[in-house]
Length: 255
Ligand SMILES: [Zn+2]
Image (cartoon, rainbow, N blue to C red; front, side, top):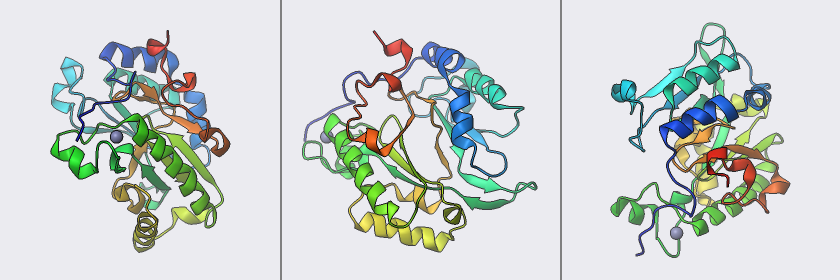
């Protein structure tokens, strides 16, 4: 089986590039729009250098840690805190909390990652793991993940009405914003995840069942591949090319 790393142009972002992105390019207005239908306050999180092993010296001890950002004045403050950490990844917490910080629900989401797709060239996730390339993926897998996102959207549309697709830098997420979905029980989420998996979708079940409450923050930088996380309209997705679309390429990669 062939070895590979990442599609052309995709690479780790440096600390300097991460910093510059969060200071100059990170669009907090758009994040405000993305989060506006959520009830209560939102928690954010960063991982500084778990996969890339790139981190500011002063955060060496916390390079692997998931750092929760739940004390902030406004989104501008969140931006400042993220910029301070220069993280490889930024997330938000899909859980919904009441004033006493008790969990009252969770935004439903589906995570389609290219590494979960069995590739005619590179094999299954198990094959990739065996080679120590669990995080690698190829252009073909990315394209297959995109096609799955389109089909999954159609499939979920029969049950839900407020769906959004996000390009995560690696694969695609489908978010469900229906109020009714927030209150789904754990059992029901397991059922949905199993059903979707059975249909052949390469989803990461942990995200759908809620064990993994964090999801990549739209408009943040995916520092593993140097791409901007971007919500997309379903009609845009068919033509969307993550290798060349300028909206997902940070300025440090634009020529
Ligand atoms: Zn492949």
